Length: 346
Image (cartoon, rainbow, N blue to C red):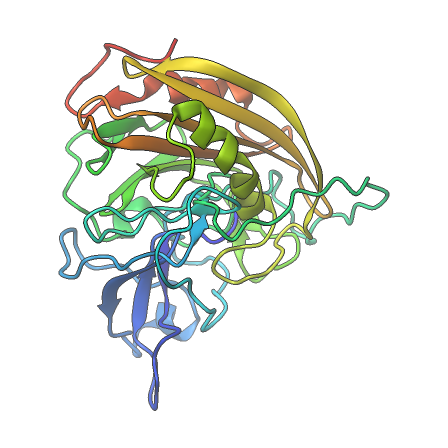
């Protein structure tokens, strides 16, 4: 996965003086800002600071473009995050490479990015000789859900409200909950929800940042030309692949060296939370590090008739990454907000 949600130096800071930290939700910059505690060892070392308590003032801003699903900030001790990366600006562009940012009521869509599988301490092996069927980048792609950089824990994200049940992540904008698997962490933000693996590893092409082997991110599907679940899923999958294993929407770096080609593994109708939806799943072949499995799942909100929900998945394709069974388990565990065991995926 590429850049997950977390606190980063605000790229719009005009200076002089140190830039305040600004919350990146995985798809775009929000309006949550804070003053870095310069005396804090974590700050001096370049690690993400502990975010303010849930309900911090400030509504997320409009994401610059669809990007991959976002991940929770990494725990203390992770590699420093590169400073002052340019952030997306403007209205969401729809589903495409790197989970596209979705904006609802001024909230930035959460981007899900899940890249890389194994813990690559040496930056990963370069991979050559691939064919030229690369996935074309899409500036209008929504957030992705594949592995990616891990910058902190879910409890650090500005929250739209506390989640009483640690086994789920609540997406109040979409009216659903995502299941939190064993060994995973969940986060509920003002732009959606995310569930990601707790483990991370140095990104193949950018070892100063951490990537995670798997994640899923939900948010309202806004900005697409298509209107049906099938149409949106097909429109988003290329953007999901690019955001997750192509170009990181925050740093604009090719974390996995770029994408050589992709193979469609699945394209089918599915029932999610009692609603008729559609999913498209690809395997992407990267130039460096782990290959990936990305999936775009779209279905009508079970609680908000006018909202179409997009869930981006991104898993590394390796023996140490989450399995496709885990991906299917998350799909089956998606519920209407307030429901428990009924109306899962079929």
